[in-house]
Amino acid sequence: MQGADGNLYGTTFTNGSNGGGTVFLVTPSSAYSDLWPFTFGPGPGCCPLGALTLASDRNFYGTTQIAGTLTYGTLFRFTPPGSLTVLHNFDNTDGEFPQVPPTQAKDGNLYGVTGSGTTYRVTLPSGTFKQLPNNAPGNAFGPLLLALDGYLYGTTSAGGTFNMGTIFRMSTGGAIKVLYNFSGADGDDPAGPLAQGSDGNLYGTTTFGGANNTGEIFQLTLPKHKLNVLHSFSSI
Image (cartoon, rainbow, N blue to C red; front, side):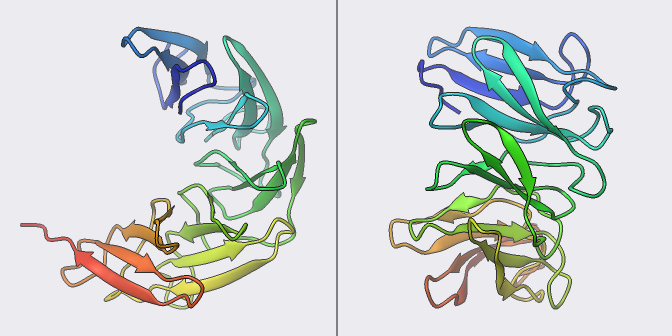
């Protein structure tokens, strides 16, 4: 993610000086710096699996998959060049093992989903965490997408009618609507994020399913929510 200073910021899952991953910086001239070392055990968490989100306040927001005070991962704010603040320690009631960073919506607040499917809001600028009333329809491993209509869209790798994953929509109030249930031939396990094309439709991939059961590229039309398989991958 490019910061306000023009440099690129990201995370590593492991290694670094404490072994638990890092926040790092890469300049346009390819100079690399470790900015923050994560660690196992209590503290700011360990093993950030996802990227960072740059919010309008010029701070980065992200999650660690495990560790923290309650061992189920953390939500943090990182202010360059080297200040990190834990905003929330997840437990097994308000979420666990978050895989991805939250997404900033049109109201200026951040919205996210954990690996177990719980959804939450982070109010800015205070950084206050609030669990939202409804869960995603399965395990979520891709960040939410803010679409042009103001809704947040996401995928679950499992769950839904056939337990092969879903595409869902969430409002900033926390209302969730399942838009599509994958069933195998039309895809299975959409573990990645969605993208919105210039035509206004949503695009993504599945890990399995499709004509060869090796994944596909799909399109979900808006606002009709019709799924079109654009390409089935082959293992050959």
